[in-house]
Image (cartoon, rainbow, N blue to C red; front, side, top):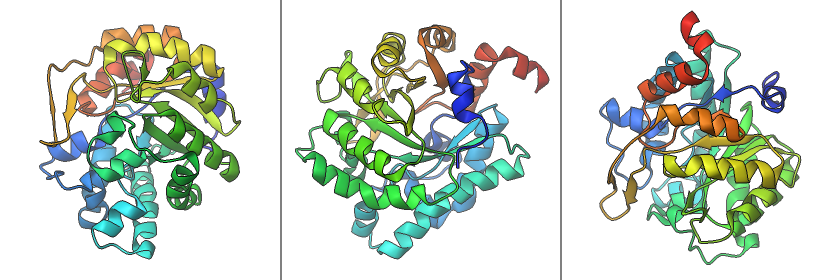
Length: 307
């Protein structure tokens, strides 16, 4: 069930502050995330660390905790020797860990977003930044379905279908979300004003906003400089409130499994994102709790004064 007022808050024009890069905070705690499972490994090995990472973002002012399920999939965990029953248990645990952080912070009005990463994330080869899957919509639907069904059966307030790089995967996710009837946001990862697969991004936004279950449409894990123009396109094409959470502008090197290039998270630019239609605003990879705190102070100064 959606947390009280989330859809209404977005439709009413209120800005809701997202968290940042969960993996970034886990690495800052000293955890090694270089395996193909990334932060999903800690669902089994170090669940308390995930709670602590969520808590750090809540303490910085985030109103949404995005779960550690981005890289957790039935195929990815099977490759690591984890059975289907245990995978389902870990997916459910990702939600309960975020709920625990919220409860321990004494902030019941905060929200839990169950992360649904793209097919490329499970491949652990950077293909979510290319979208070159070569899979049909029906095959992508079949791949996403088991994880979506598990996460939809939790108490998560919203499903966060994120870092989607191509139209085929948007179509697959929209079809499954419509079947499940659970609220979700759907965000595209873009480059040079198009999907990562080079397709017209307005088509992706329009498709994402074509079902009632999708409460927000937008972008994530892209350069901050691209956000404002794409938010405007997303708002016009989808007719939905817009979600926007860029990374620090770096490029993912899949071979070296690291980020490279110049980094910047320009908090001052976020007012332009909101003016263009963004209502769920935060950060993605390499964005730390301190960045979210600064973002909240810029966008919601009245809350910063009360903190």
